[in-house]
Length: 88
Image (tube, rainbow, N blue to C red):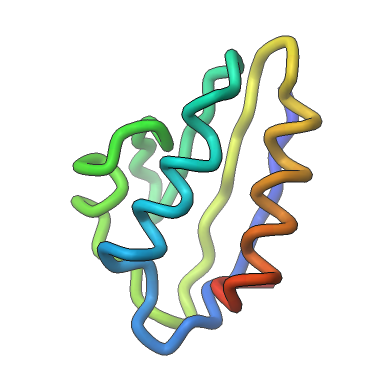
């Protein structure tokens, strides 16, 4: 299992577009990927789960990946967070 913490820097937080980008990025991977916010965990492969959290700018989230390609999942998310200006 690997995990990483991000602070959301996008002005609009994780709304529909970034949530869709995140879900689309992790769906091809075989690992189980969770997003944790304020003690609640959702499947990062579920657009409705991610949207239900309503994560605003300035908040901290944790991404947890577990499986055969967990390291690759996190590096892919890491790259997307930077290129899309979502978080650090």
